Amino acid sequence: PDYSRTSGAALQVGAGWLPHALTQTTYRFTADDFEDDGFDAAFSSRDAQNHAIGLEQSLFFYGNCVRVSLGAEYAENDAEGRNFDFDGPAVRASVGLPLWWGARFDAAYAYRKETYRNFAGPVRRKTERSEWNIAVSRWFGQRWLASLHFDDANEESTIRALSYERRAWGASVAYVY
Image (cartoon, rainbow, N blue to C red; front, side, top):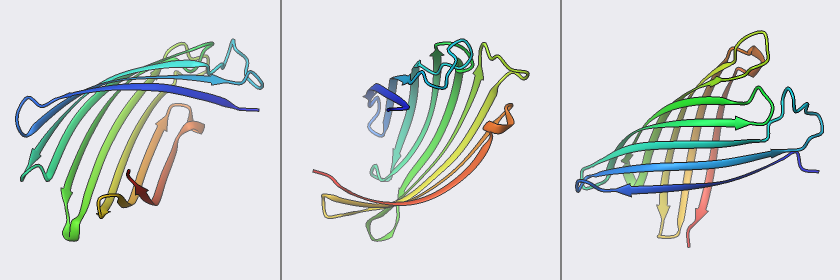
């Protein structure tokens, strides 16, 4: 049987107020449905709804080849039971610029802080997450995009078992039609 099902939707609206600027607002909704086996609804049910709103400002330079973006988001998770309700502001900064031979470099840094309401434990739960994403990509023709990725995430929680560091490398090839 399924452990959980997540469904969601996002709406993003962008407006270019100036020739080399783009402002985007985002609303995102997700719903998590976990199986009942192994969960006590009075303590740790994770069935939840998450709402997030965000604003991002991008500026473009050198004929729109270089992009610099700054963004902020606020998310709220409302779960059945306890221990998974949280409020979380986040900030993000990113840059994208062309390299040699048609390649492109993109880098981003994101920071998120989650404060859990109604936490039933000996320590109030708070989580801070910082993450770096770096990618080098190149189009081959108009349909094929190849990318190399690196991700470095660090999550610190007042619940020690939930803290971790993760580094991941990846490669992808996409066909766009």
